[in-house]
Image (cartoon, rainbow, N blue to C red; front, side, top):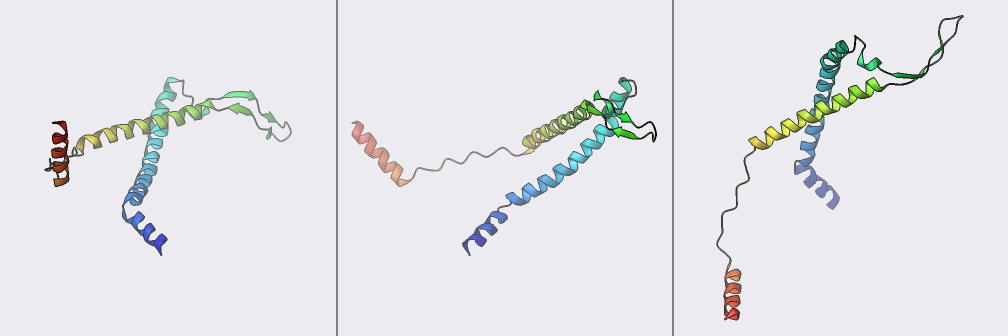
Amino acid sequence: MGMVSEFKEFIAKGNVVDLAVGVVIGAAFGKIVTALVEGIVMPSISLLSGGVSFKDWKHVITPAVMDPATGKEKVAEVAIKYGDFIQTCIDFLLIAIVIFLFIKVYNRMRKPAEAPADAPPSEEVLLLREIRDELKK
């Protein structure tokens, strides 16, 4: 029965719930940023690059081989698709910047930790101080 009670205590602390909420919100936020990058940022960059989609940027190592009789691809091309990688890096950077700004605002809004009030020393501490002072004499 000890394991069950420990698990209940672990769940009741709230850390697990906070983590679950953070994961769900993070996943939703990731989708928002991906939509922003794919729908707004990358098309803008695409205009600067002559209308080529960013995802289409690649270095072809071996071109595809077509079957002349059917017109279908016989052997797929081998290419390094660096455009997709760059787009994913931009996604990551935007998410990291927004999370950084969010944490910065959150930390400013959070109340500073109050300093504990100076409590009078306990009797043991007073007694030890007296002994110390007597020994110094």
